[in-house]
Image (cartoon, rainbow, N blue to C red; front, side, top):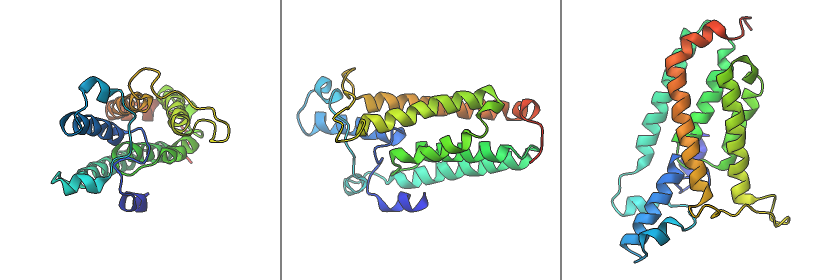
Length: 204
């Protein structure tokens, strides 16, 4: 994971996260201000990969530092909560949340990086309704993230129309994904201790 954050010169590598939304908004701003396109037409254009180096060349602060600090805070907070937890099954929940947080917060993340979350949560999703909710929603996010970019494969010729709703469907999916992440963070901050009471009781 860490090597991916340093190698790719992209805000987001076709991953529908917060940086994909930033790429979309940045393209709208560029098209309206510099390319002479109208706002309505710019909103309906297909979102493309945005090079991080272009931003820094124009004097825009490198968002890598902000993303790294935010993710480290997220990591340390989860480790703290796991340390305070008495139920060792929370190692799976913590690992899954770390992966999910990485795909949302970090730069240069690709669409396939959410798959380890699905693998881990397939072991624990039945332990609590919020875990089941996360497993179902994020399995859908992963499927549509891959399907919107690759369809059923280049040779199949089956692709989802990305502008079915005028706005690029990948941006809509990114908004859903980010809002769900906020909801998940809020839920676990508020109910982590409650989960210790109602989750699977046996120690590993």
